[in-house]
Length: 542
Image 1 (tube, rainbow, N blue to C red):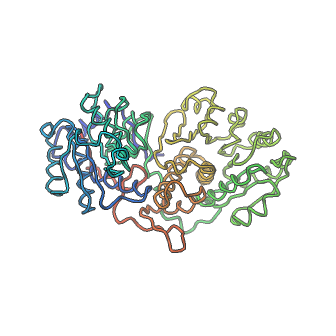
Image 2: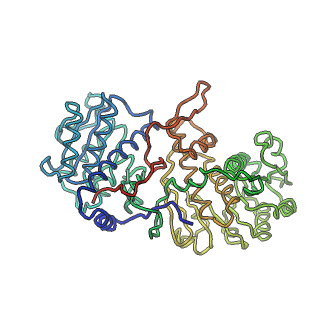
Image 3: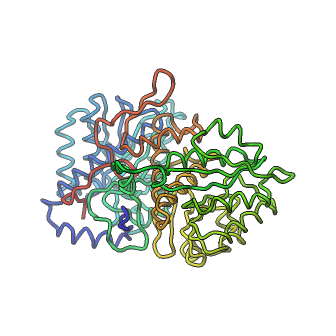
């Protein structure tokens, strides 16, 4: 399978790659810089939706170094000011205007000509020395800071003058802090503290570990085809492309897989329901759910599309071992299993899971309480494991992600702020989603999506996992843009799965309070999931 994923490069590799890509030809570099600037501007506006939208009369602070990162930031500011006539920008040249390299100087001239009096040149000394609330000045002197001082060619130590500038900027109250490509200073004490870092053209390896990078957005500028070598890769929204095409006119439900879901307990009844609801929206033809018998009536009323099988329960309300025969008699009609959501950890229930794993060779997703050391290696089924950090520590025994994936022969989805998927050889990184997913049940929705995709492509566990992770994260981006990060519930994700597939962007609230989705009027960047066609002629900075 040719995954829609691009290599993650070290800073030295990025420098070598772009040197060969452009050959030092400024005639090729300038269109690439323009593309990067526009794409950063679009991404910033999309991310502002999570906090109410970009302020039309915003104040933008642009920090500019000598090179192409500064040019990107200047062109992003130009795009913003062109779209918002009441917006203003202040530019601080970290090394003076005369220090600009040719393309950065050209970007500055274009901004100055386009914005006129709405752009001014500032200095570090002109910034508030203390937070605005304490000084009595307006609470938010800037709505947006664009950091374009240093890129991947930066080498420590941080220049003292730049360190002082960044320290003063970091102390200011700002609605959104955006770094272009890398936060200036990397991990130095006074390095730029970003809310978002927009990786332009390629993702550089430091972004995987920098705590001050904030949320990383990969902005695909068309450098890569997707078949390049690299053990660490970044997932793109093109993973979802197979789901966006037409289905065969001769298809029926039996041609789209049959997922069996085993989960639920008296203590955790909702988790398995969320997984089933997600599986039903994954495109799979059939879903059969084995749950404690007392839950069947309520669940069937909530999701009549699934086939609900009531199973005997233990005294504590978990699934009893005697339900094994109910599962066994349906295994031959299934194409994949999902085991674990809301399962609980009763010994008898875990014994039931062990017997099922011994009885089948169907591909299986193990999630939540099914992620036990004695279960993840049991049986001969191909498997996808979906732990969060705590569950991974429980089952991995100190091994790293690749090492553990190799040891158990499984595809492992390690959920986190950056979700990583590994088959032991390659690790794919997903920057989709964000803090809106930091709530109970989001993992259950993800497990249902992965299980549903696995039922449709039983021979492709990595494909099911990467598709599920990107789809889930993209829906989360749209949810946060429509409703913010706070006053939402996990099941609201389900209503954004369709929009994520259809490439819809801008959102509106319907008169009835529901989320209505409209087509975005402008292309939105590809890297966080915002679909953007990649041109083979596009490029970036050397």
